[in-house]
Length: 589
Ligand code: FEO
Ligand code: CA
Ligand code: CA
Ligand code: CA
Image (cartoon, rainbow, N blue to C red; front, side):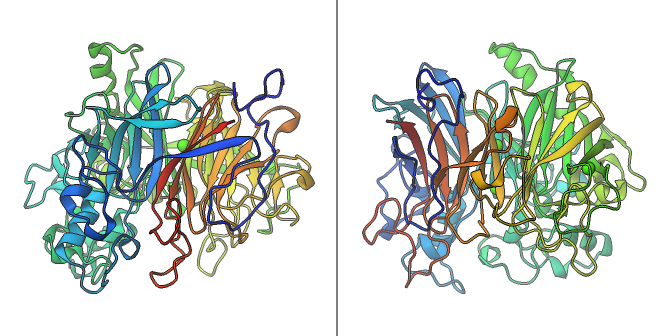
């Protein structure tokens, strides 16, 4: 129990908080150590060539650790040994290539970018010092924008998924913008395809008004795309392949136990900008999957399977469990506050002392049955955002990671920010999104009725209204604000084995680097936010995984606020080296 000093009864958060800073370093509390576990370009697949940033090739990248690591999942494979599955959300070409002309990318650069997307699977072990290290493994695997995926669930084979390259609508090439995710009880990883819209061109040239409205609701790219991929593969040109965008925006499932397995896209969980997907077993043994749609004024969703989870690791149980997400009911959340008329958009607490209320899960579709007027079930799954609009879901402040607490059974969601809340023509503050122009975000906690993830009703409250604790518009669960760390733009959530919530941030609006924070959710320490680490300048903090004796974070886009002529970060290699996204482990010395 290294994160907690021996003999101390308060578990999990026994460290001196790190002060806000703008260092080009990963800063941890006194008494802790750190190492880089793996960074962009390091070998993943057996036989991967050494990384040479000046002479990178697509063939090399397809065997090496990809760019912009986000989610990190650890799946135990033995004593102190794990599969580590990591998402590579997107590429930052101007930082990846010594010479990059954004108006004229080369084919090689574009193909390197395709190979730098997706996921990596490596094996890691805890070394003698206490950190994680990568060990050579036949399970090493890269999944990229060229890996074949099987489409499963009720929209597999849909007319909306068919393209000239895939007339079946059941085989998709690749995954992209994999942001966060979750480890399933059966040892696979779910990964959310988030900002897939940005890689497409010419959605404005689609003339059918129904198709046009759908593309617009998802923000699919118009005109020339930023990365110009449409010059190298017509699938990125919506005018030529109008259904290709519909083949992204899904939750995908990867099985690290079989490096030859075909990864899956799960249509039953709906299509939107999935931040992540995390599972809780229902009272009767089924599987509930929570997922947020990370866009201003978008929604929180839940899927509940038809079949029941079979515990155990037998081949039979695993095959059964890996089919659970094929069939079930998809819901979207509606929140109602209990202090109507008292929310003025300033973040001032209502007279009952809480931002709180009740909520319900509105069914959207189940199997081939739609619950939304004017939508077939197929349309609900493929154009989920439009169906949820029609159903009357609550517009949220960018729902990011959502995860059940394994100790108290409640569900926690990060709502990262929403500068447009209360703007002209936009929804104003309500009790669950209580600040107009919300720059710093908040943390939502809810409890399903009877603690059962299959319930269609719940109660909720805000745990944190983030920001500078010295300002009146913040709330730290009632804990004295002069004792907490400032926190801004919560993105990922995770739990340690004691049930403390850990929050990583992206886009700190308070002017310091992003970081990782702990906060107890029960007892007198509820709301006591403490900063555990800060990441290098320009980076966001991802991952995170918090065990009894180590913490793992992914440092995404270090130095992204710089330019090639004025880089802000050379982390982690130092000197004049390019900044490299990397996964870091931290342990008590
Ligand atoms: Fe990729 Fe919503 O963070
Ligand atoms: Ca209230
Ligand atoms: Ca995120
Ligand atoms: Ca998480």
